[in-house]
Image 1 (cartoon, chains in turn blue, cyan):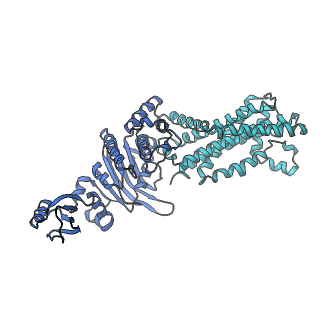
Image 2: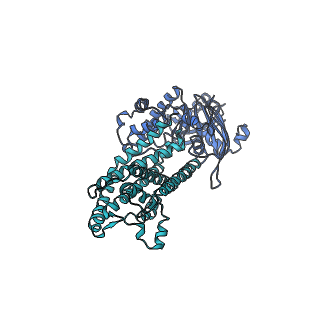
Image 3: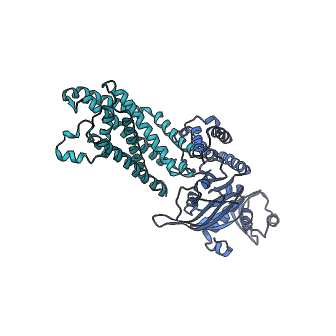
Length: 314
Length: 254
């Protein structure tokens, strides 16, 4: 059974803007799924409809087999939502935010207390349980929202840009926590602008643009489609001009740094041999951009017909 | 799903909210009404004499109590639900598997409880100034509860339709307060000239205050059964309208 199925989902706002133009999407149970797209592409509208914050114009949403219109309460009870912006009562304590949330989902008080303690400890917030939430730091507020979304033990956790604006240390700890939650059997749908985050966490991916799904596949096959990768090479000794190597585009960034675009079929071993032959020693390399980012930009920006050509338009 | 837990959660949250800010919610009506009783009831009232056989102090006590019930049941729901919208934690309720009638019932119950609690506070203050012997406790309590329900529902609708904090003060300032003062709190409608008497009879608060006054001191300008019909009608209409707004997501969803 799919955790989520969208069929011909459409949304036209009152001002006539068509945010979703009939999208179909399936997310398997247990998946860690990335829903990506540029600002205004329709991601938040789709998530808003799935989580009942926005009324759809037409189409259907099914959550673990429960139709959101016909079996509203059953469908909603499967979902935990971490929204983009802080939306809890800033005058409530951390503990009461979670207890209220558990109560809204019909969790008995005793169990709600146990779940609250478990989730706050999991988010490393137990010592802040009696703190009024407006006094928390930005990172803590984000973690409160994740703990709140988990307190009723949802089968589907939707994270809408959960790490936006948090520092790298907190982001890494949140990744670890999300992976743990996923490993415990919770299906996760993640939207993010950090493509590194999607690449390292998610197994499957959909890219939405102009209200349409332009890509829907597993991460590995998507990345396999990347034909050219860009690397930054640090050189041991300074050089005056960029070397010329057939099959690669090389640009001299500084006298000890090269920007190299390498075709996949060319291979890095061959590149290094060719550089060595020209007495250029490489001491380190790194990807210029995240691989997924490169694909994402290809899909969104430069090639509007990509999806049609790849036969993936949905 | 057990909706009673969700309902209880909303009601308890609402009670904790107004108790936490008691200097804003419970203290002001005690001070304001004590001044009403002192100035209007004691100092001026002694020179007015009696109305329909009741001393002026006894006459104004029911109206002042019910006026407090009206304003606080309304204020509780309108401010709490609008703040919930403003802070966007309404999303907690919209995402959760709670039917609309539970959301409405929870918030309205919170408003009723605050309205009645303020009513009790004002009644206790009034006992310092007047010696009230309750005429009919059942009518008194029923009218107070029904009135609180009507205005809690009205507050809920105001909160849903409001788009700014200004919008939640317009109705209390420009509709509720004038209608309460013109609803016979301080005078009998029989004291008004003919045309104003007829106009006053179109004010629903007049019926509520008079029925409550009947329950407390046995004096009324109107048929109290008409009050039950009017408040019942308002409760049904406002409940249906509130549920319609929630169902359509007007003011709370995109």
